[in-house]
Length: 156
Image (cartoon, rainbow, N blue to C red; front, side, top):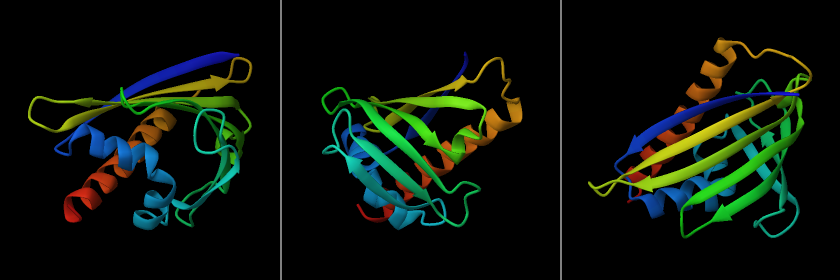
């Protein structure tokens, strides 16, 4: 099994704690509300939302995928970090064992924040992931973050 890692950093004018609440703690209800074409709904299969919780994400009509099962690996509301792994679903496209995401919201001096997101694609065998697919993933993460930011700004 190989691993392909990429990092993305997205600056925002939203305070870090508020962004963490939206991107992590409220994401299961907030994202389907503001981006229903991307995510239709999120269903908890087991757990209470904390570490070990298993969720199934049902993607919206605008997505090429139907669903993905993900597990919460770590969540730290004090340090504004969250890690989770997609362990099943058509988003793995038959070539990935899993995808792990590490999110950290870092406060900035101007009162805003930077969202740091590391994605680790665990491939089956020696499968290669194209630069185009990685770029596509980065763009989708950026779109979702910016949609959440716009929603928070409009509903401040």
